[in-house]
Length: 137
Image 1 (cartoon, rainbow, N blue to C red):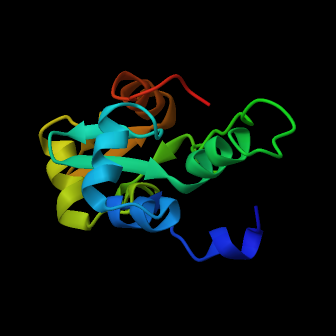
Image 2 (tube, helix red, strand yellow):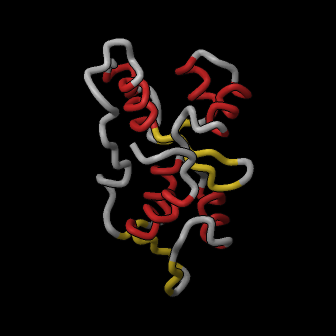
Image 3 (cartoon, rainbow, N blue to C red):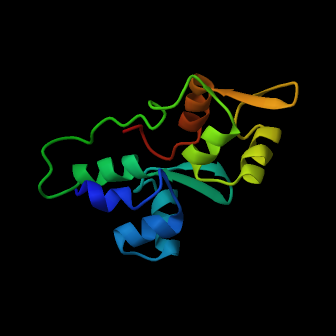
């Protein structure tokens, strides 16, 4: 698929973005996430995280011109071993208050040192894998 097309989207897609890409309604997008037809992570009852590159890989794998299985995608590969709230905001496509709320209630694993949060990439990977709706691509 065209890189310019995908560059229009953020790293973390909303259900509206997923619906637009798949040309379906948002409620259908949520159903497809619930049924693991679309790869995603359910961090809270109301919040799905869908990574652009994982959706792209899944679509390429189910294309009638697919050349093989889905490519392995590690959405955390370009991030440092220790992440702060800014990196989490970028990665997850969420606001600072949402990221802090998820850190406070341990939705995201973190360590608070003198008022600052640090999240270790390997712990975040494990937490995301635990809430993934389908096998890792």
